[in-house]
Image (cartoon, rainbow, N blue to C red; front, top):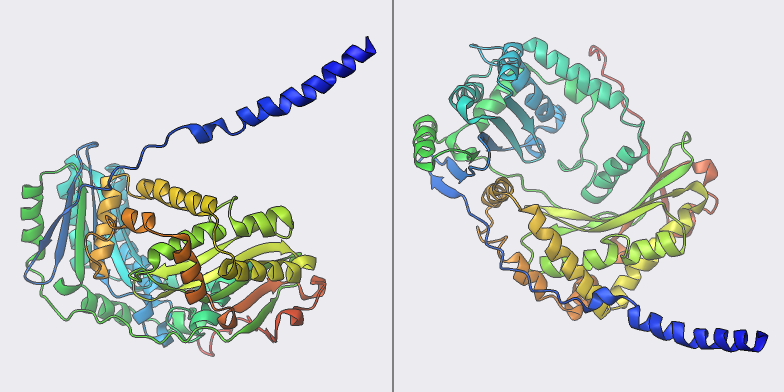
Length: 480
C-alpha cells in the first residue's frame, strides 16, 4: 500500500507541474483588438476682432451649462514684493461681489438655484467659472459677466483674505510634505524665481485694494480672454449671446508672458531639519522639459517604465524588493510653457534615509544604462494608451484641453497625435531620451527629516547645505 502511495505521489509530482504550465497566465492568450483612432468631438472656435477667443461645445446629455473665462496673467507676473497678491485677488474678487450684488447676496441667490460662480488664480492665469441648470443660464451668466466687468473689491474682504493668508504662512512648516514641495521648487528654479517664491507676511500685508484693482483693469481686456461654454444649448444662439457680450470689450494690450532663466539646481544635498517627525521625505530633483518637446512621447514611456505604478522599476526595487520606502514615485515633468521638474521622491523611516536615497539614485542610473525589456515597453505603452482615453472621455474634458492648447499656443490636433506618438516609441527611443535628458551630475537631493535619527550621514550623498525655513516675522508697523 505504501509503495502504491509513493508511486501515486511521484506521478502527481510529474503531472501537476505539466498541467500548471499549461494553465499559467491563460489571459495572455486572449486576443487584444487594436485601439480605435482618437477622434474626439471638437468644440467650435470663434475669434472676435478684439482678441477674445470663444469655444463652444454642445453636450445635451444633461440639462446643465458650464462656462469658464480664462484670463492671461498669474502669480508669476505679480511683483516680488507683493507675492501672494494673486491668491488673494482670486478670493476677494468673488467674496466682494459687485456694486449691484455683494458677495454674500450672490451666495444666497446662487444657492437657491443650485448654481455656482467662482473666481480663482493660478501661476499663469486667473479664471471666472460658472455652472447652472439650463433654465437658469441667462440669470447666472448675467451675474457672472457683472462680476467680470464690475467687481467691487471691498477693503474688508481683502483684510479677511490677508488674515487667512497670514494664518497659512504661520503654519506652513507644520507639514513635511509641503516643506519638501516648496524647497524642491526653490532648489530647482531658484529661491527668487517667480515659479518658486513664497508669500511672506510682509508681501501679503503690503497688498492694497488699489493693487488688486489695477491688476484687474490691466488683465480683463479682450486680447487676454478665452471664453469656453459646454452644455445643453444651441451653438448659434449661444454664439450670438457671447458676441453681444464680449465684442464690446476693448482689445487692450496683450499680456506679455514672463521670460525667465532656468539654470537648474546646484548639485548637492539640501537638508531641512524637522525634529518633530520620525521619518524622512526625500526628493532627487532637476529640470524637466516642456510639453512641445518632440521627445515627449518617448519621455512619457520612459516615465511609465521607471515609476508608472506598482510594476515599475522604482517601486519594484525600492519599495518591494528592498523595503526602503512605503511610498516612492516620480518622473520627468513637462509643463506647457516652462520646464517642469524631474523628481524622484520617497517617504522612508529616518534610519533608512541614506539607503533609500542611494537606491533611488541606483534606479536612475539603471534607467540610463539598462534598456527596457520587450515586456516593459509593451506594458508601458498599453498603460499610457488605455488610460489616455479616460482623460478625455467627456466633451467637457476635451473642451478644457482645447482651451489650454489655445492658451499656450499649441496646435489644435496636439491630442490626436498622442496615440500615434506613443505607439511609435521603441526601446532605443527610451534609452536615448534617458541618456539625453537625465544627467545625474545636475541633480540635487532635498531631504526633510529628523537630523537626530538619520543613522548614516547625509554627507555620504554629497556636500550638505542646511536649509533655514524660519518664517520672517511681519515688519514693524504691520500686523498679522
